[in-house]
Image (cartoon, rainbow, N blue to C red):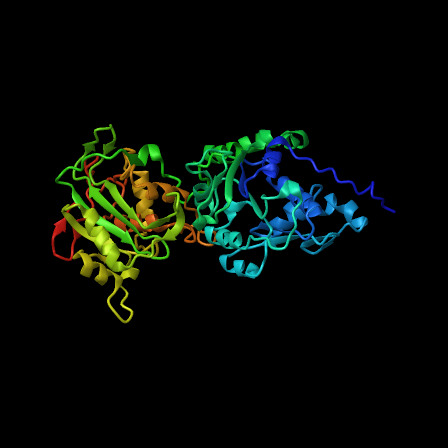
Amino acid sequence: MATRADATLDIHLHAKQQVAFDSEATEILYGGAAGGGKSHLMRMAAITWCAAIPGLQVYLFRRIRDDLVKNHMEGPSGFREFLAGWVECKFCTIVEDEIRFWNGSKIYLCHCKDEKDRFKYQGAEIHVLLIDELTHFTDKIYRFLRNRVRMVGITLPREYEGRFPRIICGANPGGVGHQFVKMTFIDGVEPLKVIRAANSEGGMLRQYIPAKLEDNPSMSENDPGYEFRLAGLGSDSLVRAMRHGDWNIVEGAFFDLFDPQRHVVRPFEIPDHWLLFRAGDWGSAKPFAFGWYAVASDDFMSPHGTFIPRGALVKYREWYGCKKDAQGKFVPDVGLKLDATEVGKGIKARDLGENISYGVLDPAAFAADGGPSIAERIAGASGILFRPADNKRVTARGAMGGWDQLRGRLRGNEDGHAMLFFFSNCIHSIRTIPALQHDDDKPEDLDTTAEDHAADETRYACMSRPWVAKMPANDDAPTPPPGKFRAPPVVEPSGRRIRL
């Protein structure tokens, strides 16, 4: 027969976990590196708060239910084993994915695999939201769940006043949500500093608490070989992400060839004789993306020492229709909701009187649905004409794929020189393109649930200037001089021939 003494729980947190537990912040990202003790923190916090606050409703999320059960319910440190004494003493009961405490508090173990699944929680009143591996979720799911965080009719003990309702998320770099997590919690914010988020961002007290393997001594004691397994993950980028919590590294990135040291250049004056053109991806609720490009008509050395080969594309300007919050920070993947007339005027203003030879635009903008198309309205407001972009994404039946074109230019020519460059002021292209991930079901395509608008616009630009790396010569074909490859001329609608 169990006694109350048998039901004593040994709830222990390490120093960095205690920082998160005691923080005045109400929206916390904890972690970065693997092994920092994210899951343990969430379980211990959930149990402690449920025991101390009658009627508390805690929702603990992972994206996949199997991961939720394996990580939090089963195993020597899972809820079943840890709460076994309390279950025997009737202090709590575990019914499927729900833990019910004697004082009316509950822990709900939840999963939300797809964006449509978020509506299962439409009516939830979440007092404490715990999300394990936030980067596995999309921005849309997170915003929806955060919107359900509220507290009515709960009397808080004095030591907890002002700290509820609250959110604690754990995450490692990478995954479909990498970019929005990085922008929301990390970019431009000093670690551990508590800031008030804008009302449009939930208005909570936000904090990033970086945690590494060294912050979780239990891991070293119980599994001393874990550090070496992290060091043996394979690629340097994955080791830096998982061992050291480097958010500037994205393992599994679709454009793993993207290298800021190689593809990002300081702005310089574009030579007058270089051909200029535009590319655009339409968006309203989601961001639109327009890029201005120059085609290098000859080998060129920038004033800052970057060699740009003949035929390379240089994106020298961008306009990205992304919303800002009250503090001036960009809101990930939320558009400005401008109409086509306003966008057309904005494009014209940003042309700066330059001699733009042509423009390609998202083919969806040419659909006429009972009235003028978006492309027609842009033209009516600005006099700027676009042609439909080639929208092929992947190579199929011998047709050229847009992602292959973009990858090929990032990879570069036979001499190892990149064929696609971005001015450093194209911050959204540089921010979003390297973070894009593969589609789980179509590895040859990228995950379109991520912020892919600048990538689409860049793909349209690349498809408008087809480029193929020089192939090895054979005995029957003449060998062109090194560095003198020419793509076929592109014929514009006007009949003008534009050569690379």
